[in-house]
Length: 311
Length: 250
Ligand SMILES: Nc1ncnc2c1ncn2[C@@H]1O[C@H](COP(=O)(O)OP(=O)(O)OP(=O)(O)O)[C@@H](O)[C@H]1O
Ligand SMILES: [Mg+2]
Image (cartoon, rainbow over all chains, first blue to last red; front, side):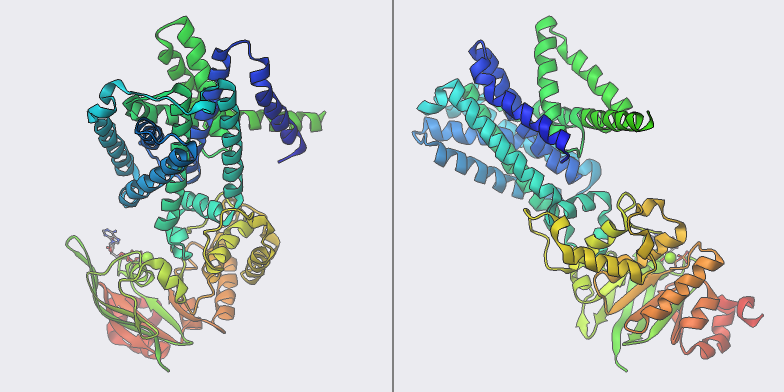
């Protein structure tokens, strides 16, 4: 990172730390909590999709299952976040291992369809679980400290910070470079001696586990979980966030999630047809800025530097 | 000399087409073995089967006595097999050094390391630079592979194969599409490599083949129709009618 980037990151971090202090009401805190949770979820998909080149159309499965693990355990009397969160993340990792192990044997459209099919299967499983609310969803009573919006906000912020740092390290690590190179040129990676499948699977698992963690936070924030969390439309939204922000750009997931949700919130307050606006924004990005918003910012930055150098 | 690579009774069909037809071939340790044959004879298909990306229908491939017929490609690489591609297949968006470092990283233990930045692993970059030097790309290290001249990309292609420190190197038409200068440089490179490597060279350029090869095998319609010293192959009437034609007699 350059100095300027560090400075921007520092300012944003400081701003995020001050949100609960400056926020006029709980609505604002909750909105920012949502932004951070989806920033994590979209970043986890960006690892799989952007870095790993695996177009998973079922990423909401982990987001939803993570939430349901917390919900089901909590209503069964196991409320300790240490237990519920750990179990949720582990189960999501296991789920991703299973789904990945099967779907990674296919490529292209088949991969997209299989990941979607698994997510849909799980969606219907939770719809049919009457004892846990079925299609209506399951209200959760989070343990005491987590019921305070400010406390939860800080927990979410720290969790996101840790996860992003982890992803940052992964990106430049041996593993990260191998995974990115597989996206670039799979056959050559095989010829170089990489067991491609294994690297992709591990990448898929990390993505699933982090999405599960985001799902855990989401369930706590809403004190509620429903099958909608793992609907295909949710998977689609994660994808839109990544594409909006920048596929394979480190901040793509986070920025995409923030812009998407703000757009949704703002347009949603104006018209019930807010999805039209979001769709238009996505269309413009896909057509004119394939690097997403992050790509746009970095090329604008490069242009400015060049102009300053020329002057 | 013993056979480092030993292929027997290999068959591969693509639908109705028999691309590899009861193919038998042995490559001795230390030799440069050229594999020639007309377009579509099945040379690349054979290389693919040796490398493990194409599964044969039947038959057996042995590397140093070990049956590798159904081993996945990465295991074969670990056993000392490396290949280049007829159609350049490098990481176009990466620099020469980044390309080679990926290969070195593959050989240097596993890559399930999630924390330490690769930039800090000096030995990877040192070895990558060494290989760049070896294939004549020493001064082009920081150039994106996609921006290299065609001949240089072919050199990088060979460099990538060298990163795994192979015992047996499979070269699929390394001279394809090269001008005379580039081809000359590549022939020199191959000559230097053969000092410490066994090489199976697929090539259409007959001058290069007869300059370099210890032995030559001729593949026609998926079958080896002749195998032997260059002079014997040149004199073989079957080979002349089937493949070499006027080119050699002239
Ligand atoms: N995946 C495939 N599916 C169907 N047919 C194939 C496939 N790969 C190769 N073939 C066919 O098998 C035959 C052998 O092809 P191969 O590429 O091995 O020939 P080659 O000797 O390398 O030719 P060249 O000198 O042109 O490179 C050709 O007729 C080709 O069309
Ligand atoms: Mg060929």
